[in-house]
Image (cartoon, rainbow, N blue to C red; front, side, top):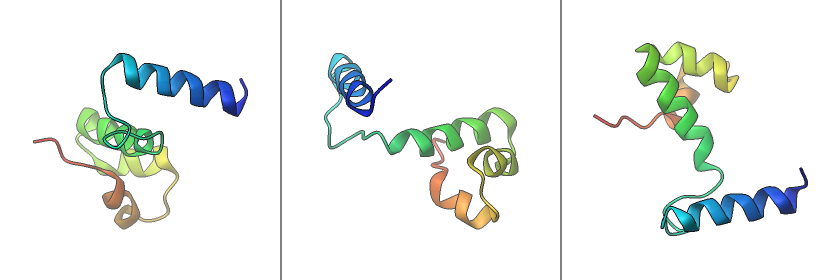
Length: 67
């Protein structure tokens, strides 16, 4: 898939979900993945490994508590 195709599909999906561009950008997927992993496992170290961070402190910048 080309970059242009990925951008188009992401934009189309965001519009279909009626989410404003200012509220959700492609880069937010990384934080969402880290947050989901932390919530699913109950351990931020799993998200740290998934995101490839050497320090859990860096992972804490990405994980967004939802509770």
